[in-house]
Image (cartoon, rainbow, N blue to C red; front, side, top):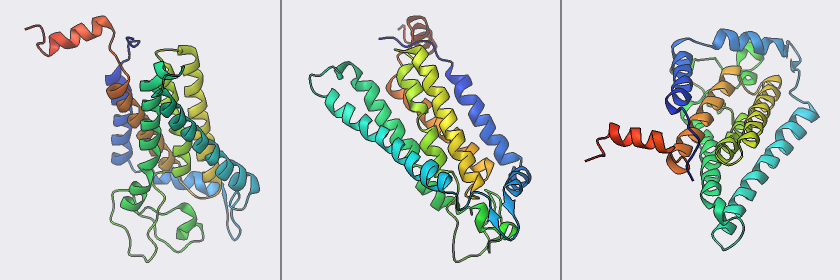
Length: 240
């Protein structure tokens, strides 16, 4: 089945441009201004010990996303058998791959960057000194593990559902995209209220997850429409 046309240069170029801007223009003044809205001197972040933010929006919500991943794996395994899911084999394989990459990339990036959470910084009652993303970290016995946002990734990784559905169920795909962006944003806000992440941490998470889901879609699922496929063949000199 041929895919519906998709403008990959635009869909990839915009997030890459936003990444470049985040590296070129230090977002920390905005990050700190926003986090100060959620911080009460002497008491801490307003959501730090919230049952709803920690137990429900963080723990239970993340478990729900894990269930989606488990169901995707189970669906893919069943699609290898002569079942009704067989026509969805490639789509389910893509979903497992995209979800896996989007969430598993977070931990090594956290370790590599060593960024601290707001609640660990001296400006918010902690002991650590802030350094921008590309700067050398201040000496510390407790390296940070807060960039990118792991919880935000649990929501934004569901962008993969949009790409799974866009060629078969366009309307459902749009709904899935809104749900993924909504959940990712809600998870991001919850962790910001707790002092666990800056806004830019979560924005980076969205951009990384979008790029992963997009590139995997192009490699695994996308089948160019006939006109586009012919144009690509001509561009590569495939007529000879």
